[in-house]
Image (tube, rainbow, N blue to C red; front, top):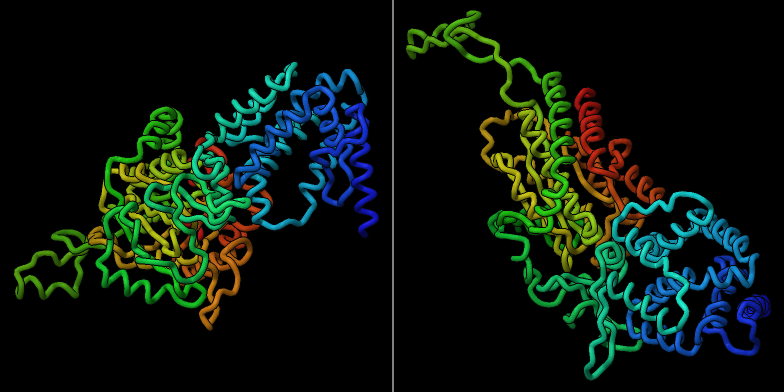
Length: 567
């Protein structure tokens, strides 16, 4: 086995040396496919970079990235830029490089589809490097790049560097891209380290698979960098907590989410009921968001006002049709109509002339809707859009006289926080614009706690037999830094991947068993196959994928029509 690996490395080095036109030096990078065979195309790119640029200066520049805890990601991104810069000149020297590039693209996409890697690895790679590599391979093969996330698309285009002539120009171009898209800055102190304010799409995955936590300044922290105790994102050095016990008061920082929704006595009662079994050791907290809304969310909604208004009108019209079909006649006591014999005694005894029965239309629909928004950090890149979509759905439901409330949920330091963004009684939807994505998402616990929120409030217009429908806007990828508990109180496995999806599915089944209809509106930056598989496990057939605001009205209307007509 060792001899075969060394043979593969020798082949890779020869590929680099051939492209470089020089032999005997030790290549700083070698490329291999997942099965261990050398990637001739990428090794040739490494060689051509050595040929056309000052290799020592390139390596020194790349070494500077190693100060970061995300050096591998930044290095891969930099090589994508160098590939673009060197390819035109390399093609003049080696016309066969175009064919090698196509073969590399085919092999990469096949490996991407077929290989069985962990969900955590897919989530990290899908955010930046794997997404960009796959996009480039698709374009090489004449396909659409397939980039729907604006941040991904912007970085991808920025990495199409021109064939610059000098090493200094190349590193300057790369510096510009990394500073624009990763907002890096070198801080000089008792220890040199790259401090990075990461973009939302990357944090969406990294917060799921790294030991991070939310602190007062919203800066996530990570314990341990590559040989440094300051490998952090942001300036805080607060330790990340990984066990079932968190240091200090677990309520610390929860004021960020809003004022308490329940009394402490009531909250504790709910926690004692839901934080059991696999969720033993966790906490639940209920907050009420205040204020006029997040400025970013409001600005995005204003920018897309035309599209949102059109979608809202379309959805409202469809929902009114649903209500008209499902609304039942309501028998009420009246002074005229059909005589109700059992009430005749009331005339003499109570001087109540309402001894007749009249049939009136219900003023409100025979069901209500709860919007449940996943507010984990994986939603940051879509935060403003999700807030706008939730308002769109809520306003459409109200226009159709369907009672609606809205809650979001996220987990911080082992605490699952459910935040009220709109009550059944409120007519305005403006508080929904206060939706903020941060932390983790322990979907199973959030769904357990949701049952206590369906009957909340003095809704005099709601009949006791009213049916509940939950529309859950989610990416169908639950994850939490607090693991699943065993009966003995120890951690059995992390709350990630399949285990987390199965836990969420169990809670969803419990809600359905109690008569609550739960429907998933799924939009995700993660790979489609994994997302669809997770959504099917959690929601069964009761979910739809949503990729644009324009789709929301059609798909939400269709799924509500289908589910309500089946009752």
